[in-house]
Amino acid sequence: MQQVATFRSPFGSKFGVPRQAGVVADVRGSIVLAKEYRTADAIRGMEDFDYLWLIWGFSANKHAAKGVTVRPPRLGGNKQIGVFATRSPFRPNPIGLSSVRIDRIDYDCPDGPVIHVLGADLMDGTPIYDIKPYIPYTDAHPEARGGFTDTARWQPLEVMVPEELEALVTQPLRNVLAQDPRPQYHDDPGRIYGMSFDGRDVRFKVEDRRLTVVEIVPAVPSTPNRKTKDTNN
Image 1 (cartoon, rainbow, N blue to C red):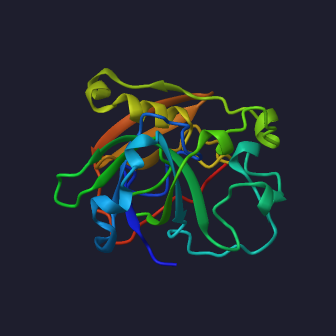
Image 2 (image 1 turned 90 degrees about the vertical axis):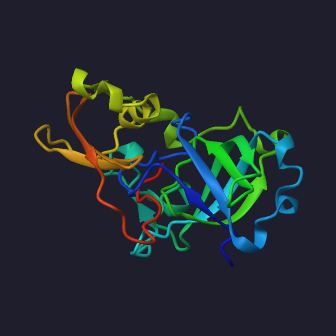
């Protein structure tokens, strides 16, 4: 396969990326097409759809799947489930699938057309291998069962932000933090975690289902080809 586009995202590292597309619906990102596809003809008709499917690579996962089971964060990171019954990035083939909402298409920017989307669960620099329209009459199954995701409900954290940092915490960032970016087997109230978001390093701690932002500083410039997340589902 060849890469057809690159995803641009406020997430500068794997840590903190939402575990599913649409979980944080107001996070913005953009799809920058590869040069050979950088023409309006390549996306002609896309403006008539609301959502897209993105097929992409877990390119930051340096270790291939070593077995047929994985430990989903939704189940606390301790229970083993079959790899093909999860969306874990640690798979025989490191391929991701995400549904994102089209926000707008910019035809006039230097790299245009650029597709701006909402709700993606991709890290900055993620390679995209295909883009397909989401079609409601075949792709939507509201009556479908969701396996362990039906019974293991995700409980958002309460997010506390000191007054002096309020201006730096946008609503999308607050929503990301509420999803609890930590590995689910971590439970150390004294530990300070850090995640890269929109060019800043956001540092926080968690105790009793309450996340407290402790510091926000400029992020260290990322190295080339830092991509995708290492947690999902």
